[in-house]
Image 1 (cartoon, rainbow, N blue to C red):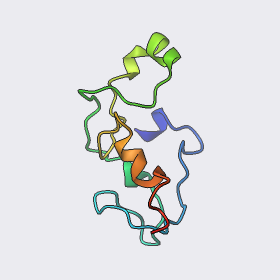
Image 2: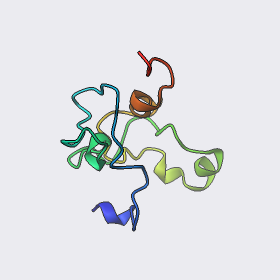
Image 3: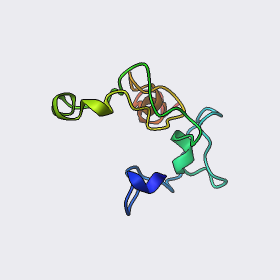
Image 4: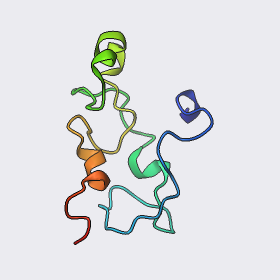
Length: 94
């Protein structure tokens, strides 16, 4: 199932050790490293009631069928909520 979209290398860095706390619903591997299942949940929904946030203007015009895909994410990401857990540049030094 994963290789339909991910051929060869994963789209996001996996195996990177995290040095800040992440919520329990975003599980790291035993070495506190990012794994695919940190953000993705294989039993999640394929569709969403809100569009995915990280789409460009061209995607909206050309690939509109992707706007309501959930990408089997553990959390809704239409406002970047999932990505901001780790990519929020504020408060990571506290």
